[in-house]
Length: 178
Ligand SMILES: [Zn+2]
Ligand SMILES: [Zn+2]
Image (cartoon, rainbow, N blue to C red; front, side, top):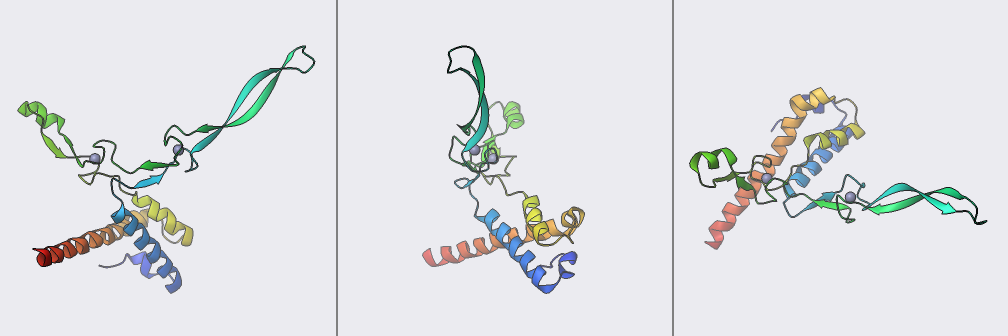
């Protein structure tokens, strides 16, 4: 595995911090499953959304009415007030496979295949650009173009490395338990 070129140009301490961020994001992506949750974007993970409501209230004198503006906290509809939403893929509900519409029509029976949206993983990936944004907090020497060209593939390699290690571990485990 070769780290991307612009990473090598960084000062040692910054390079280390960037690597740490990449490794953390790769690990988070690797650990994510259909059962895990992510922060709700609609309410910034608070579970409530502040909105202003205008009501007409009678004046104390009993004559006339006045407008009263109030800040109210509404329960976030997106996450039902929980502040988190499921990472499960919306197309296949985390099952990883879905009915292939075209193929089903062709064969006249429901045909199941890997879900196109999540490529059969059953859950949404952490967008690679989030890792880029986290790196940008540390150093501004990596542009989005550089990231797309060499950073993103390297980040992808980190995730595959974790998946490969896991399958080796599974293989070893199967050997001893068989
Ligand atoms: Zn929410
Ligand atoms: Zn899916």
